[in-house]
Length: 156
Image 1 (cartoon, helix red, strand yellow):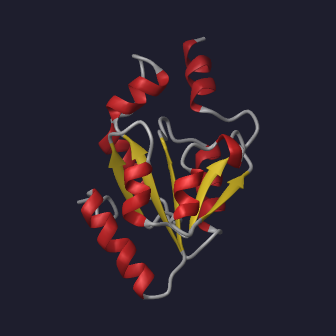
Image 2 (image 1 turned 30 degrees about the vertical axis):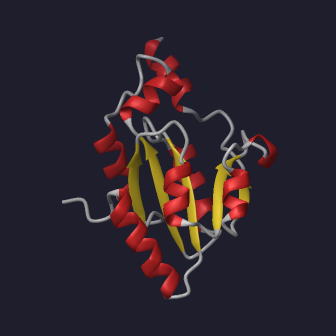
């Protein structure tokens, strides 16, 4: 049983429920392949930007398109379940598109969070978030922590 892992429709209903209670909805997205301390600190910082954290997880297909044919290492269902197990995460949904635009339109977050490897100007979904009344928050990365680096270390 995965109580915090939702379909897009369920995630939309959950967002509407939180909004009706006056909660500030935070959204972030990513591959989250080989969950590490950088991910955890990033998600905790994202959660601090509002009242509830919704996370979009790239599907296996979209991770392969973004990161290459050897990725992901961890299947999408397991990545979603790992994220859902974190106390700072309120809801998780897997999305198959290359960008999270459809999920953002469905959830209409008050805050969209990305890591410090982005600037707001570089974020393709920033205009969409703003058009829906949301704001962008950039949170710092944990230096030296990445899935790519972990995979390189394991390969050595």
